[in-house]
Amino acid sequence: MNRSIYLSIGLLLLVLGWILSGTIMHSPDEPETSRASRTEPIPLQTMKVAVQQTQARQTMRKIIIQGETQPFRQVELRAQISSHVIALPAAKGQSVGQDEAIVALAKEDRPAQVARAKAEVASQRHEVAAAQKLSNQGLQSQNRLKAAQAALAAAKAELKSATLALNHTSIKTPFAGILEQRHVELGTQVQPGEPIALLVDNTMLKAIGQVPQQSVKQLRLGQPVHVRLLDGQEADGEITFISRLGDAETHSFRMEVAIPNPDGRLNAGASAELHIKIGEIAAHFISPALLSLNPQGSIGVKSVNSQGQVQFYPTELMRSEADGVWVTGLPPQLNIITQGQGFVNEGENVIAVPTS
Image 1 (cartoon, helix red, strand yellow):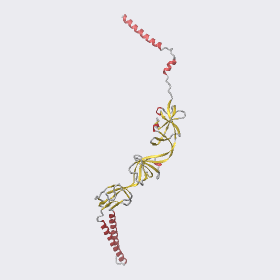
Image 2 (cartoon, helix red, strand yellow; image 1 turned 90 degrees about the horizontal axis):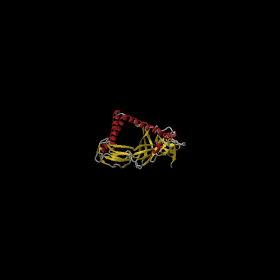
Image 3 (cartoon, one colour; image 1 turned 90 degrees about the vertical axis):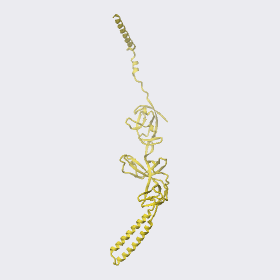
């Protein structure tokens, strides 16, 4: 029993000794300034950013529309009579002139039908002349004269029909162009309405594009357009059509541009960019990497003002080029942050380091 009491007293003395030693080590005599120095935050250094001074320049404002080239006009020639092909004067892909024969059909008995119709017309003319003479003498009624005149009119109609059928044995071009497709070969039997060939006018092209509704009011008929094809070729044309009915899904408006192509170097069906100038405006040319978003989600650039503070300017993208973009909405001159814009916010003080 006595041993247990001594052991408890010994443990109590050890605990009291440990407590007293902590009190001595952290006594109130320690300077307050020393403890305060361990809790105060270390002041942050002012951020350095690289800036580049830019100047606004007068540049041509453009509307750029994606489109494609199409033939200015094309027509599919069809058979008007029943016959078979006996000659093909023009080859597929050949340039042909206006009113040039490209397919010949068998005439069969059509020349004889024309000759017979001509003879019938001549005969009926004699009948009308004789009936008119007798009618003037009162020897024949007016009804007989009218019947003779009707027979003459029917004979003339028959002659016209036979002549047209004979002419339709030679299928000719309504305008100059390229024989793009030919659907028949020698010996092909054709019926009225069957396609014979596709003729394309390549002396003029038209570029088709869809204009956004916010830009269509800036366009007018006759306005010059510069066309750049995907293969690198370029040409100039003018607006010939602007639709007044917008697309129900895209709310864009169809536009057509006429492009002279006298030498036939431009091909229809090619992708094209339509560049339309709509006036000059002051703009800055910058790298796309300098664009950023503010907390409200607006796109713009960060700059450093004369007080050394970060300032955000919303911008509007005017157009892009291979090595940069043209933006508007900025002052005539400003120091754009080129390095460090991602680490500073609007209103912060920074040290601007100019770059060349």
